[in-house]
Amino acid sequence: MSEKRKARTVAAEDIVTTEKFQWSDLWKKEDWLAVWIGFIIIAIAAVAVITGAFDFSAAKFSTWGNGTSFFEQATAGLLGKLILTAVVLGVLFSVGNHLKGVAVKKYVPAFLGLFLLAIIVRFISAEYTLNRYLEWAFFAILVGLLVANTIGVPQWLKPAVQTEFYIKSGLVIMGFSVLFSNIINFGLYGLGIAWIVTPIVIIFMWWFGTKVLKIENKPFVITVATATSVCGTSAAIAVGAASKAKKNDLSLAVSISIIFTVLMMVFEPILIRISGIGEVMGGALIGGTIDSTGAVTVAGTALGETAQTVAVLVKSIQNILIGFIAFAVAVFFATRVENQGENGGRKIGAGEIWYRLPKFILGFFAASLLASFVFVPAFGKENVSAINSVLDQYKNWAFVLAFTSIGLDTNFRELKEQFQGGKPLTLYVVGQLFNIVLTFAAVYLLLSGKFFPLPQLAG
Image (cartoon, rainbow, N blue to C red; front, side, top):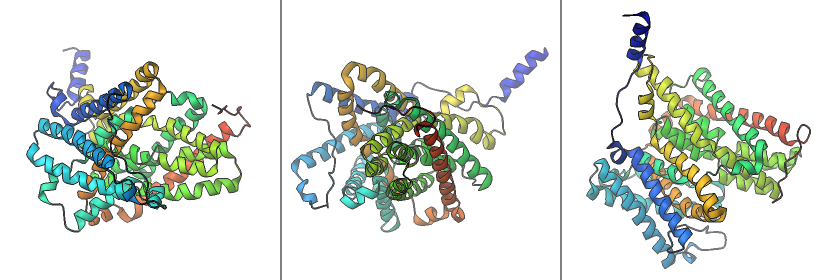
């Protein structure tokens, strides 16, 4: 055998392939089922909005408690929407579970019980003060934790506790709202602030968490890093799934992110006003550093209308990165992180990378591309915006089901152990400070007016 042929043989032996794609994966594997569920909901919502033939809107609780009573919205209309939401999600996830091999007769009553808990979460999180300062994800985890750590999770409810299935389906739906046209609105300014700073912060936090703090739980490190640098809960959900983070990891990462999001939402606009850097720079700083999109809007509004516009544009451009980062993390973990432990550093073949790649990421991208390059040109931004208004609530319900499941699957003792002597908190605080400094440097360079002309934001 020639040397070249030997080299090829050795190289081939070094490539590890454990499983191969089968056509039945398309209707039996959870990742693919999540994609189909997401696209079925997108398709029905699109038909409903474009034709105007029927109302497909999911239930939504309006804010109550600031001089208004919840009972003012407790109408037959809301009840009808709750029934519609339960039926749509219940049927789709029941079919998905049947195809996965789960007994539907056990899943259906469990789903209804979980949906009832989700209603309680949505009710609590709609209260005026709580809604202003805390995200629904916090209350979803809290309600689940209270049940799990008091009366315990009843056996009949456990079949519906499927965190990843709800998360993946919600993310595919979310993809339709990530429009690439947002880049045009703020051009290179937004790209410079959101797309250059963000990867640097992720890499820094990965290095700091694994090398300096020596946190062994690598999926947790990358989940916190992405939540800090991109958009909190949504990014944590996507990257947590891509890196195969445990439920406790995701719960802790989201909890830390939410707490600091509230603090930054309140105090960052105050500090920006004191500094006198102006609405354009201040809005960009808020958009690039505060984790949650909702909190970014509130904080930007506190500075002024221009600040709000800039903050939301920067955050919207940053949100586009979710799919790219989740894809990169999935490949990185498959080829480098997981490979180190289980395969002794041997090469991973392209086939196995494809097999390990979470397919919901492909669904996310497909939905985003469909909205950006098919629906916007064909039906206009107004129709796409209306479709997203419908989809937003289905996405939120899927995520509430997911985060309530996380709480149900977690006990306080495990959550406490996750803090590892305060290392997770240190990771977030140091990473966020680095994020703020680096974002401010990018904002000053691009939007101070000293180096580049300021963007035209009118219209």
